[in-house]
Length: 173
Image (cartoon, rainbow, N blue to C red; front, side, top):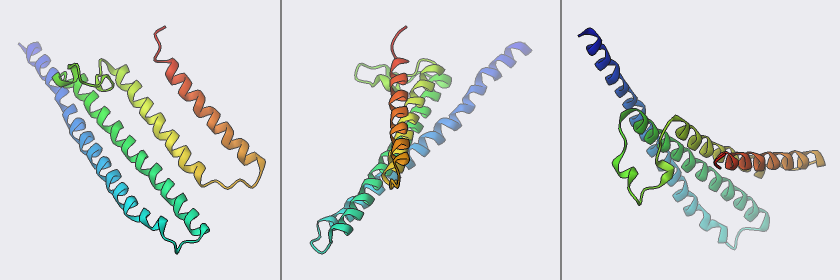
């Protein structure tokens, strides 16, 4: 009797994961909202780019700012995607399979079979966020010497290696 009650309570304790699911989903929605607002604001300001009153230096500065904003927007959407994948994965692993996720039209990206699937999907999106952040940082670099350019090239090579290794991890052994 005590064992049955304990096992029932232990099994129901998995429902505490719903807190993480709900708040991860809420955080994902917040990130999508923030990135969307940033995109709308950027588009409304970019009309200044065509102004004939701007000289080439001002236009170049505005262009650099716009590219930086685009990178930040992409970063925001990627973070929202990470949180969404995390939320869906936790729900599927601990609560219940999502019936709509198993349909023919559903994306296999969101179909989580085990903790390794969740980890791999999150790792890939986080890698993309890091690549976007590196790109954002690289946009602001002014090369005073060849070593700075060499460092940038080394970073790009490491990014390529990371993408290659993550792709190789997907192939069956």
